[in-house]
Amino acid sequence: MDLSGKSIVVFGGGAVATRRVESLVKSCGRVVVVSSDFTPKLLRLAERHPNLNLTRRTIRADERLEEYVTDADLVVAATNNARLNSKIVAAGRSAKKLVNRVDCLAGSSIIFPAVFRKGDVMVAVSTGGRSPLLSKNLRQRLARMITATDVKMARLFEYSKRLAFRNLSGEQDRRRVLSRVATDSVVRDLLERGSLREAEARARRIILGLD
Image (cartoon, rainbow, N blue to C red; front, top):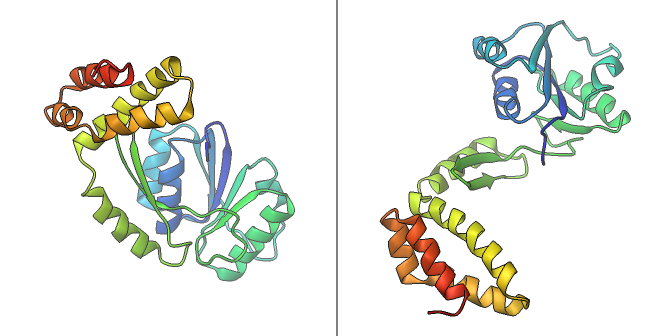
């Protein structure tokens, strides 16, 4: 999802809520955290990010929550109280908002995968919300497989796709030349040596039928 410019409300100020906020605050327009207490890391995040607002308030399970979710695009239930989380989910769904519940899948309309980014390469791993720890471990294992050459290959393919679309009209022809670029040993060798410009030149010759 593209969350830029979106408003998020997170209920809960503990460790799990902190991880959710940390993953959201850099890409969202506004994040509001409602809790009676906040982790030190959340307090530090609020100092660094002006779009993060910490609202110190104790939410009861019998309290009406409409005022908190009305202007939100996404509602996150991250308290340590299962009954309260159910209430938050119900309020969010009633207001037709996207909802994420951290303690179980029930009621969630979206889940958060474990994400690793390196340059333009992103790996997201999900177990459907059943085991965040396993998602994290798998993400760490996969992250070790992503090399600097893979990151350069992503940039090369952005260039190659534009060039192929400008110069080739048929889908099959574009797929054929892009497959050649992806498997070309010279291209790979140039990228491993850090020569992105030379790799682009080689890709251009392949796409234009010069090699």
